[in-house]
Length: 194
Image (cartoon, rainbow, N blue to C red):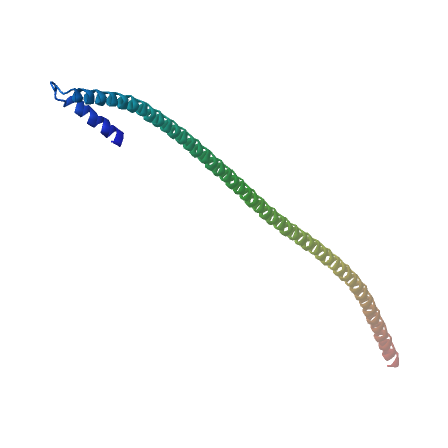
């Protein structure tokens, strides 16, 4: 309670507690002056009360404005935080997508390298198989050629042997015939000698 409100309350109490029936005119005059002061104080108090109400309303309005400004500021801060969080999330997602693309590319490159190595290995195996087949075919041709040459030589040797045998047999027959002829001539000579 303010000092003025205390004084006003005190005056009101005095007015209520006046002793009626006093005859002294000075008392009546004093009471009249007190009433005037009380009325003036009440009017002044009413104005002050209105001023206080007005000030309170202004304070409440300023407080509402401050609250609204603070709320707007908090909303702006929240919006900025949300924007920053969304930007960070978008950046993180973009980074994750870039990393995923990099991993896919790396896996693709590894796969292509493995396929290239496998293809090279298969081509080497095919080349080795082709070379081995060529060597086998060449070896087979050489063996067939050698077998043919051996067979021809054997045939030639067999033919030559047959010719030699025939010559030998003919020479042996001629020798035997000559021996028989010589023996007959000797026998004839022996007979004539006797």
